[in-house]
Length: 397
Image (cartoon, rainbow, N blue to C red; front, top):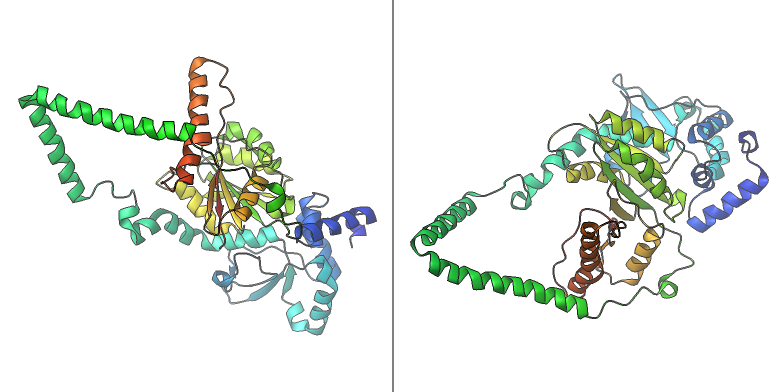
């Protein structure tokens, strides 16, 4: 069958070696390298098993989809339509194709209902089935479960009353005793400014954390885990042709990375640009969020998060061009760090600082923040402000 797909012995041997190194299987490596597309392989396996190659229809529901493990896609999926007719969709591995054929030969009643499909089709069907639930959770779950942590309620009644009283008192004393008010507020503001300056001076002259020892943190026998990458885009069709090649350069096995580009359902221009850019790149996938309020990045990310299966996860912005070695650097730091280390923030570098004085000041501010202040805060156990991009998380504990 592999020969019929145009794969020679040398290619198959190389893919087997890669599968052993990455902890995957032969089919995953063949698809990751782009030698053959998934539908062609699935059709060939269906022919070898003497069963149809088919996709899961929009009206079919996956039975027990909520019990499917997040870390591994099921190799057999049972569906049921509106007339209660069932089908069995198989995702056989190449190494187990003979065992699958033998099983179907011994169970003819199952062979009549069996189909071969692709992983992408199963993922699409599972995403379709859970879309409403994921959207409701992305929009309402935080407000429903922890309303005081949600921005859905901007101000509580007590907060609003307190602010109004404080503002009214400030206006009153400003008009009745302006000199005294200024004499009190000015030193208070100076103390706050001095405190902020003291923290920054301490970070500038303080000792920085030691660099990662790549040799000590590497585990030659450990295959690379699955890494999930999420990028939310909205009205950003212009950056897609630069974003996709930049993410493709990430130094991580293509069979062990899933990159999901998240688009809003009514953003047709960005959807078309993403479809065009990711064609022929099996590690990429587009997630379309149904158009609804609020139009925020957190909602889009929360909608796509349940579809990820990686042990580690990173969030990027549409304008980001991550360093190719960033995933390996983050992986080494997670492995070398303490057991309670669950999040890393990559430094953002402004590359046009030499263009003009404003860009230079901007670049200097980012360098001071990411290279000095944030490491110092983290090293001393202080709260760390987390940016909205380039954050790596331990997704599976």
